[in-house]
Amino acid sequence: MYKFNKETYEKRIQWYKDARFGMFIHWGLYAIPARGEWVRSNEEITKEEYMNYFYEFNPQNFDPAQWAKAAKAAGMKYVILTAKHHDGFCLFDSKYTKFKSTNTQLKKDIVKEFTDAVRKEGLKVGLYFSLLDWFHNDYPHYGDKFHPMRNNKNYTNENRDFNSYLKYMHNQVEELCTNYGKIDILWFDFSYDDMRGEKWKATELIKMVRKHQPDVIIDNRLEVSGEGKGSLAMCNPTPYHGDFVSPEQIVPPEGVTNINGEPLMWESCVTMNNNWGYHGTDNNFKSGEMLIKKLVECVSKGGNMLLNVGPDANGNIPPQSMKILDEIGQWMNKNSASRYKCGPSGLPKPDYGRITADMGGNIKYVHVFENTIGPLPLPGFKKDEIKSIRELATGREVPLSTSWVHSDYPDMCFANLGPNPILPDSTDYVLKITTK
Ligand code: GLC
Image (cartoon, rainbow, N blue to C red):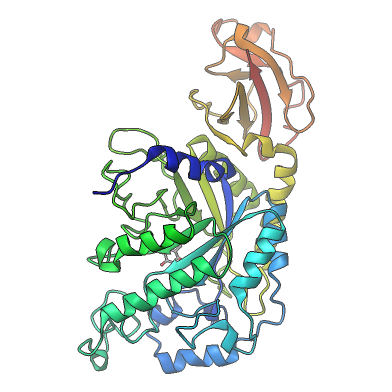
């Protein structure tokens, strides 16, 4: 019987809870067709045709130091790279396949250079690994829900040996866990239908992983996908339960709890436009301003945000994404204290913004997204408990208001932001409130 050890769990997850903000990098051969990382499945492309991208792959500007620097400058604390996506192409020098980056014109072990570069910036290292594999002959083809050859009767599954695929998959995870130093996060993707849990031989897999990487944080997708929470949330953890829930393309409306209503660690993974892998014509980029607010939303609800970039076929993070990262970085430079090591405040959400709280102390951060008419109400705060109010960006004192206009609300505190209705930071103006 597996026994969940809450103490070990809390210990290993602490840095990750503190971090709150990470970068996801989706990169692979699919950057060449530039129609997203699902292109082979979506367009039912044969293996032979897809191989052309493998022969062509030769990113001239591959420089993971630039990726790591961009992540750090944006205030991110960890970076997760797709070591293998569903197409089966390995960005690492696996000895179990020829379909890997070292055999392309680039000739490099991308994972090796990536892990070195990320650590050099002082950030934590994560690897994404796809459980699905559309390249391996022993993975179900015809009739599978997602395989590119799912509709092609020539690809029946008679002579396919799923156990042999599992062996291959486990071997590769072992390579990732032994050849690249300390791995901080393993991000498996994903389970569907009966392809979940023990179908992946997950107990055995995680036993091996934990042997090599005792402190690694693992997502919940050996059990579920972006849909579903997993056994930790059911309060009945399996040996391969995830350490966090991984909602995708949504910030959970009320955070995430287990069936007993207790808060559970989660990480919302989010794209900047509408694709994970590089997409040449998808210009539906969210604004930096919006993403700053959504990050604050995640923190105020006790979760992390994993923000994606999809470098192009030359290895460059698209300029639109760099601009967003830069905007986030500029805000972070002044305000990151309201996010790092912070979480829910327990106070009511004000209608002009959100509140985050320092998890270790008596500091609350009031995030003002839009100004109010009249002094700024501080719901949940009591006058005699407030020690000081400071503008986080400058440390400038912000007085409590003594105006007559709020005399009808004697139990509410109000801050006096001064006569100018334009906030000093139009995205998210942060007040640091220290209580006694
Ligand atoms: C989905 C997709 C995949 C993407 C992942 C990120 O499960 O299959 O393409 O990598 O989400 O969360």
